[in-house]
Amino acid sequence: MKTAKYKRIFGIVMDSVGTGEAPDAAKFDDVGSDTLGHVGEAYHGKLAIPNLQKLGISNLRQTPIQGVDKVTSPIGYYGKMQETSAGKDSMDGHWEMMGLPVQKPLDTFPNGFPAEILQKIEAFSGRKVIGNRPESGTKIIAELGEQQMKTGDLIIYTSGDSVLQIAAHEDVIPLQELYKICEYARTLVNGPDYTIGRIIARPYVGPDKDHFTRTANRHDFTLEPTGTTDLDYLQKAGVHTVGIGKINDIFSGHGIDEGYHNESNMDGMDHVDHVMAEDFTGFCFTNLVDFDAMYGHRRNPIGFGEALMDFDKRLGTVLKNLKDDDLLLITADHGNDPGFKGSDHTRELVPLLAYSPSMTTSGSLGVRQTFADFGATVLDNFGVTGNPVGSSFLTDLK
Image (cartoon, rainbow, N blue to C red; front, side, top):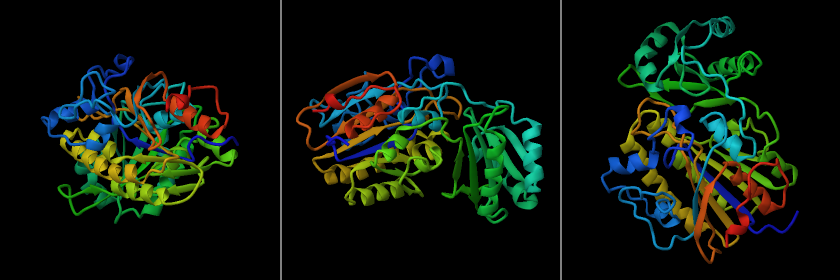
């Protein structure tokens, strides 16, 4: 292994924090989407994210986020990345970042799931399926949750993405049983007839529809990666890999030496702080999902902004703890504009921020033509060869 320019690389994915419509947004009916822009507007100039600001979060945009001015000299490098994958789900975004773009669109179910899938789930679980339509999780649980508590049925729903979600009250269907049902559902949709990106267990608690809340025991059962990812190449080369948050789920555990489950964004940042205190040579890949799961889908720009400000505070600690031979890369996996129509992800460009205390200058990384440039840079740093996708920007970091 060549001597790495950076001993440790910390990649943080702010799940769904897009920065304006992608060139192919029309194909997804997402023209006009701009997650960061609309969150800024909702705050009327009071969005305070000083750490992201000094990294260049507004410099990478044509129009700065309201209240977050462009800075004259950002402390690192900034740019945007454009997705080439067929879909706009977390799986597509993360797989592409790790050198495995999703070429063929996965199945989506705008009219609900076919009877043959649901009948098999009913037969396996001994429970009836209710719901079966695209819907916001909070909405369908409020509507059907009380019935589910009485009958023990399974609330099954989807979104605009390739997902099958199963919601159940934790006191009615124990977690292990719910996970077992999801594991079975996973076996039904790995192709060739139906290929679904993620089966998601969505447990909730609470006494009635006014007080239901989804818990952190959510679990994603993801399609196994269809090829070798950058994480696999790194692991095979003896580079230590750490996955924080749903990274482990997204890659079905492949290519990850050390994994941490997040209860929340702040819990995820606790894990980041913990891993930063360890001495290792390798790549730590983190996903922070609250932006998406709690505020994006629910179209709540104020909550989204609060989550950004909370993350920004924790980012201060990360910046302080970075060593000269560490590299921090911050990006997103897609958009989920809380100021846009509907309740689905939005096809957007994503921010790209790169910083190391050893940098002597700063500048633009431009618009990267694929998310795979992210992983290509990590591989390049450790002298590892991967799939022939993506261009490293390692030599641009000075």
